[in-house]
Image (cartoon, rainbow, N blue to C red):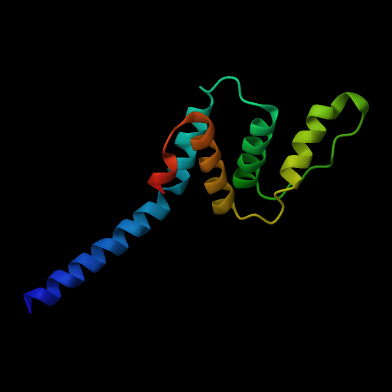
Length: 113
């Protein structure tokens, strides 16, 4: 009866909402990436964590050779951080990135996914 139709509608709506939320991960990631650019005074560790998750989310596993040379230490650390994410899925990297942005920027992007 009407009760059954109401239940189906509620369940269907819940499913739609979860699909929409999942589809929105990339959009939330993009919003977080734009917002974190406004944050100043981030530590090198925070920057490396953001960088490595961003690269893993957008490129995938590290696909370049490790930079060499004494004067390339910054690039080597970035490479090491990204390479350390090897095997992490794009979605998981996006979620980790969003969580890190929330931690350093005081935002709540994580509630949108």
